[in-house]
Length: 394
Ligand code: AMP
Image (cartoon, rainbow, N blue to C red; front, top):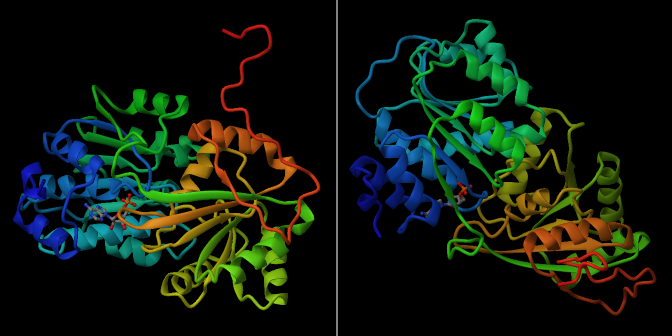
């Protein structure tokens, strides 16, 4: 099905054709017509499904009416949990709006606010922002919402995980009551549902089930390993399989620094990214990772939020995340639309609970691989996916 069938017009379809998008993804097929009619939308879709284009493309159409913005005004606001995601979404908007006369900007904390204030002076059609900096700007009257037409909450579950609920509520209080609301979230948890109830009326709900053909192709496997052997096993995997690139998730920033030095001792160059590094350093490291200058990037969960590297080959869970949803987010960094990715987890016995939660969430056991040189003393049992307590067997 061509994009034009969804109701998109030539300036938009031309830009996406040039990007090589031939077919809309499942979420795009469902969301674009709904957004074009001006309805509110709640969409359960993970990163990697093409969800950004599913709200950006129709929003561009809705805003492309020659409206003349007043200073310090915006027409659409996209709230994102992290600066990295804000930058990435704004970069997509720029590409998609190549043939339109609409402006966009990413705004986030951790950097000097003066240039951002300056950029707002003439108004911006689509502002992509993290909640904290946006509120700051609104308090300073650098920005007014009276011309806002569309609100997008992107990765709503992560914004809630990161504790942005108060900021989001304060922002929403300032917005015109008459507006279109679009909420995207990997999972529609109870908290997300509560946020949606307060913010959104009569929304159309869509859910991209993990079985859709558009689902990113991710080859998941795990290796059970004794904790003390983890860094040696990782070095072995990198060398043995000649990995060219990996994003390696680890629990703590101290752990990240330690792992980098352990890898380097074994002749593997690596870098780490975590909350303790300045914004400028994080951005440089990310740029170097994207360009391939850095091949092994060790990251804590928070630092990696919103990272989009078009052709990320592989993610490694050096430590399993505490939450099953976080696992889904992490592996979503690879296998993006069209490409096949690999997600590898190193699992020691004390991760058994997390493993059970993840495999139950996936609904299947993750393939295990064994390596002769790394025999396991503390065996990790096979997960129970549908555990029925004793005496309650049907
Ligand atoms: P997202 O889920 O928005 O993070 O998008 C994941 C990736 O898919 C991005 O790199 C997009 O450029 C790409 N993408 C989005 N829509 C399409 C499409 N219809 N065809 C091919 N690639 C797409």
